[in-house]
Length: 362
Ligand code: SF4
Image (tube, rainbow, N blue to C red; front, side, top):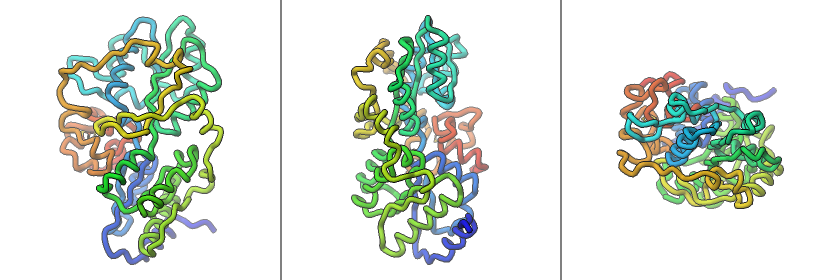
């Protein structure tokens, strides 16, 4: 008989946990499953579950969003993007256009899409228009973009790429020696693509327990139980608690597409700064389909107030697991999903949005 969520909970409750243990997840899907299942309230009080850098939309640099808005406003351009990106605001005065949704309200043709295939279809349907695909995402989203490029795309389709890798953000936190967590739940979908081995550095270099989890309460609780036992028994290994999907080595075909079409480079994370080798850029031979090469650059105005995040918004600290969403003073007051101030309240993978949707009101 399969082990149920209740079984895992009972096993966890039977453990003798002498002190506070902080477990970080790095996937918006994990955070959503944890919050919606109410796992924080069910676990012993000594266990703290910390949402970490699991939202690609939240860390997409303002410069990229601004560039996408400006391209969308050009005559003859159709801008397509994954739906989450449309409402993410750039930190500009309210009198200016601050998001793709506002650009659309001002006459730009901005279309939400759910997959790269839709971008190709739109380009094929409108051969007389320039179609720009604003592609922000982690490895799981970037791999299908690379596959699309590998298959060949219409001459009028270009990609404004803002792809990011997850593990370098975790490595940066651990290297800072102020990581703020004692164990890691590694992302299931990213591991399915890139291979679980990518997370072995957590155990090897930092001597922390780690477990790959799926998106059910059972899988997450199994991963939590695994990391707790590792800590309590003084053992360390990378456990795969999502073996039905995550296989050793990952998805080789997806990795091949990523390698052939894209290069890994240093990249900016909104509100956080540059993280070494944490981004994807298109290979030079794809310049004809690289929106950064094909169109002029539209820099953000220098005189704008604030920094990478709007004034008072703690998204960068939330993304890095330094602060819980409801510790931001704007949470649920000035900032709600209906009126988001920062990107973490916009995206379905943003911790603020997830906590608010899960009924955490203060
Ligand atoms: S509640 Fe809003 S303003 Fe505060 S960190 Fe979250 S997104 Fe940013």
